[in-house]
Length: 181
Image (cartoon, rainbow, N blue to C red; front, side, top):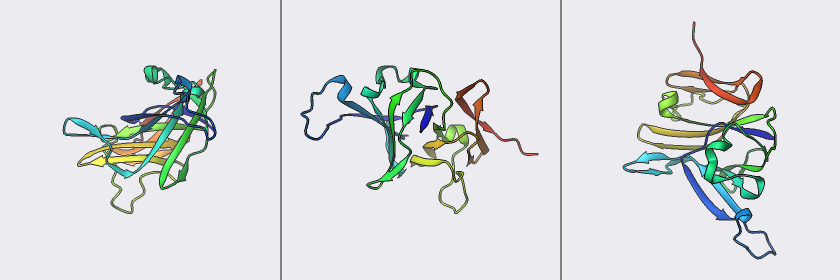
């Protein structure tokens, strides 16, 4: 599955990726970087999960955390999102050398962008084909990480947002607020 990165969550952790039967070398290529959502609590960004999950990026696959902003709008070969051991996960295996048309996008949004979503009611706020990875919330603050196909949608308090790929550059996309007539 090809996924283009449109945003990252606020929290990062780094771990050495161990392989069974092989001693850990602690080299740069053995590193794995985990990204998830967080919200400002007091003076720090904290994980306040309503739904916990993460996106994993491997250094061996071409991910460089020192220039994460340069990874935006880049397409990765990925495993499809999954639910395992009580957590939502998506593995970004390798950065593609050239842009390609992605199957989906890693989208991160906050209450400032969408007005926030209301998960307490049975109301549908995310389309059936998008996959929620992580959702952090504290008070009125929210951060949501979703793997979303082109033209997927989410409903915030400001309205319905559709993910629209850019013409001629399908690896780039943005959430567009739908106008109601």
